Structure formats: C-alpha cells, structure tokens
Image (cartoon, rainbow, N blue to C red; front, side, top):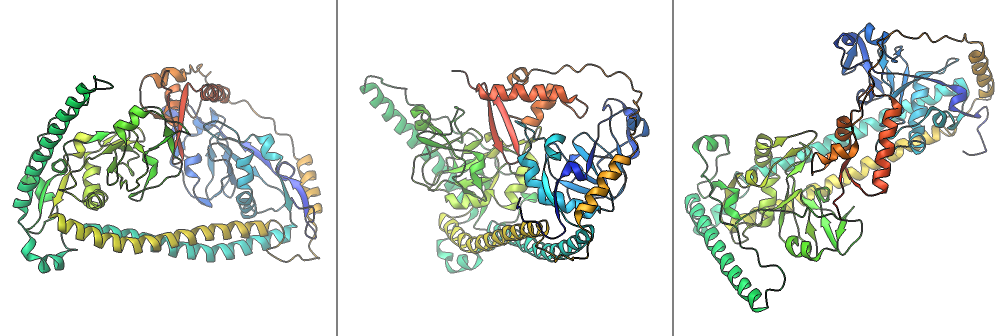
Length: 584
C-alpha cells in the first residue's frame, strides 16, 4: 500500500474494522432439520451483489442443533472457502454454512461500502488462501489484510460514484453480451440452413448437370466404403509380407477390423429429421468410415517430444495449443499420430461440452488422447470441414443430447453411438461449396466475437480500475470538513471494547457419530478412469457436516500423494480431476 494517504484517510486492517461470524451445517441425515422456512445460504447461492434466496432451507431445530448462525437482512456475507473473497449482501435474513462468514460492521459503515471494499480485495484474499484442491482463507490471514479506510462521509460518496460508473459499465456489458449471443444464434442458424441444403440452393440450380439423386449418392457411398476397406486389407497383406521379409522385427501389423453393419435410417427417425433436397439423403455417419478409433491412454507429461492433444485443446471447433501435454513413447506416437484433415470427436466431457469436435490441420507431429475419438473419415466421401461443421450443428447437437450417457458431472457418447448418428449426404462438390460458404461467413462472425471478447475484457479492466481508484482516494474528491477516518476507527475500537461479551451458549444436540473417512487410494482404485475431485471427496465421506480437521487430513494426504506422484491431477475448466498414476 502507498505511504501517501489522501487527507482524512487512515491505514488499518480488516480485523481492526470488522469482526467475522462463522456458520455451519445441520445433520444432512436428519429430515427434521431440513425443508423449513429458514433460508440456508451456501457458496452455490452467492452469485451476484445481492442474494434474494437460497436453494436450501432449514428448520429452527436445524439451527439449534448445528453451528449455523442467522444473518440479518442487509448483512454482508463473505466466502472464505471454495471461492474465497467473493461477497454478497443478503436481502433476506438467512442462516449460513461453514464456508461463509458474516462481516460485522460498526459505526454507520454501510453494507454497500463493505461489499465494494471486498470486491477490491478479492484478489488479495485469494492470494492469502491455501489448499491443494479447495482453497480456503483462515480468519487470521483474512484479518491481517491491510487497506485504507476513508472518512464516513467520503465512503458514501465513493459508493454513489462506484454505482454510477458501474451502472454505465453494466449497460455496456449487457449490450456486448447480447451482441455475442446474437452472433451465436446467427452461426447456429447458418449451420441449420447449411445442413438442410438451403445455403446452396442457388449453387444447385447453377450446377444441375452435376447432381445425382440422394438415393444414388447413398448407394455410391456404401460401395466406396467397401472398396476402401478392401484396399486397407490389401495394404495390410503387403505390410505383413514386408514384416515377415524383415525377420518379423517389431509388432506385427494390425489387421483392419471388419466393416460394421449399419441400419438404414428408419421412417420414424426421418420424421424427426429436417427434410432434405432430393439430391441429398440421410444415412449413418458410419458410412464415411471403416472404423472409429479411441486415442492413447498412456501417461503424458508436461514435457516431451510429441504433443498429446486432449479435450481441453478443442475450442469452438478448432484446436488450440495451450496447456499441452507430451509423450516420448514412439510406439504410442506410431499408433495414434495425427495427419492433417483428421476429425476428432470429444466422447467424454460435461453435458454441455460432450461431442465437441475439431479438424487437425497442422503438419507437425502430434497424437490424441483417450477422451477423443478419431473418426477416420474416408476423404473421397466426405470433406473434413463439412463433417466438423455438421457435428457442431443444431441437428447433431440435439441428437447427441438424446443419446449421451450421463454420469456424475460428465456425459459420454461412445464410438458405437457416434457411427449411428444420422448424417446428411450430398455430393463432394456441394460439400466443398458449403464448407467454402460457411468458412467465409463464420470467419467474419468469429472475428466480431473476438472483438466483443476484447471489449468485455476491457470492461473488466475498467471495473477493476474504478475500484482501485475508489479505495486509493482517487475516485471522488476529499472534503476537508469531513471527520477524519482516525476518529471513526477510534469509535469502532471503543464500541467493540464496550460491547457486552456474549456467552456462547452450547447448543444441545445429539452426540455426532464419528465419521469414518475412506482412503483416497481405495476410492480411486474403484475405477481406472478420472474422477472429479468433488466426487472423490464425496466418496471419501466429505460432506457439509464433516469436521474441518478430518477434511484437512484428507487434503494433506492428497498433497502428499501428488508430491509422490501416486495420484495424477488434471485441470478441466474450473475443476480438478484425479486418478491413480499408472504403475511403472
């Protein structure tokens, strides 16, 4: 903090100005404690400046038999665990859980001033937090945060000015978000028209002599697929002959799997699909491939020779090359190496993101991870970009939503389901025309969206700048007639000193059963796949009512396991995922 303070301001700490009261959770296994008329706020309810309701509610018995406390309407609530530093103002009286604290204020300091103060300090609160998987800040560390306290009258002027500027900023952000949403709607509309044949109506009129019926296209596609498979078998036989001539060095070439028999699109399915032009036909996505392929399940590292593309590297239908993992395994690279034009499908992800796809267009060496499926499309049948655009279209997304398997925090669409997708076939020439038109129109839309993203980020920078100026004395002018903040601080100290020492009455409750925590390794050993950290902790026995010391022991065990590399951790969006490290 700068040594030069504005006139009337004083440097202090949070613990000198505020006190903090914690919360708790009634026993989740006791139905008498839940579903009452007392709102019970937890981290999931804290989303905006004001909190008007809560997902859960409890009874008075729940209050009496737990450590929760009821905060008055107008109280400022601060998150100290999971998302430390976020604050809200209650517009209702409500009980709180143990991840929140009531910020008790004195001497006329308004809840709005306290809210904006913590908004300006959020980064500092996070900085002082600790925890391997779940961040949390202790009251000692929280209370030691220093800040500059302005005079009471100036606090009110600061709040008024912040709200004036934020109101203008919010209006601008709302317009930008609306514009961004409209671009998304435009792109989905464009894709919808493209795969109903509407985008290329004029092209078909101009190229009528090149068109064949949808029925003829499907017949030709099926024939080409069989011929392509025969060529694969012939090549395999040559490879085996060469392998034998070389003294059977290395692994024997793998024989191509037999062609999967695919059912035609039924009349019932056709009723639910868009009507296509007579020169198009609905078939199965499996008609374009001799077999889809899952990626490598081998362990990857932060450094290595070959990059391993994972589901997080697919963004908006394209590959990004941030946060790459690598491998040095030559056998894995040989088996899963990517070639330009490969289309990859994300088979496992959150319900919103499962099924996202991208085309690999780089010429540099790379391979793909196990949560991705390489479609292995026959390039004489389908254009790679056409396939990618279709899988990101409304009709494909809608089909994926209907057939995906849902688990805890994630969904799955396996290879068997993928090849059964309905697919709109048209001539390769028309596919290329559709791709050309989509790339042209999408590129301008994407450029506009990137421009909006830049402006949204600028708005956030401006918001932080407003707060920084506000709490350094540079947003509003100082009034020499204002009572200095030092006087306010003296009164706060005196008020706290004179406050009656409230005896904490011990709430009568049934003696809690000792919680037996499951071992991390035992939980992860039940599956060979990744599990979200939240799910792992739940299976270990962590709940809202779990004693803090038990939770901390589990955190410490996880930290040690990560240090010894017996457990692997992977960041996916805002969540950590865990699995047992591969042996050897």
